[in-house]
Amino acid sequence: MNGTVLLHDGSVVRSRTPSYRSALVGSGLAGVIALLLLTGCGASAARVKGARDAVRVFERALASRDYAAACDVLAPETRAQLEQDEKQACAPALEGQGLPVSIAVRRPEVYGRQAVVRAEGETLFLSQFTGGWRIVAAGCNSQGDEPYRCVVKGG
Image 1 (tube, rainbow, N blue to C red):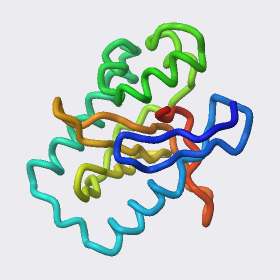
Image 2 (cartoon, rainbow, N blue to C red):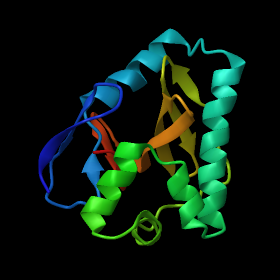
Image 3 (tube, one colour):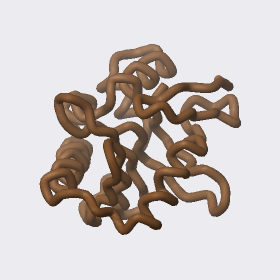
């Protein structure tokens, strides 16, 4: 499904292919990555820990095949987009995505209410909500100068 989607942080995601299983995370998140690299990630230890903990909960849920628990860590827009694209509830929809399970999670790069976490074989993007950090996009891989390609993304 081609289209433009506004994320929680105001950035725009544009899908370049008709496939709903992978989408390009738009220049908004690419800009966040560039800003993170330039600013040195001066976030507080609590914010970094919160982002890391959210990714660890997500990855542990995937590893134990507890897709309902993994869905609980998705941002509301991401969960809604996944359910809409797959035409089923989040847990079975997420199971069908074939996301990698990453045990080694590197230190999050946090700036403002956005975070990037690199793990084994993937990158995850997060936003901070009132209830804590949530996964906005998962299963993302760098495409060089192009935006990241993500298996699961917000809508």
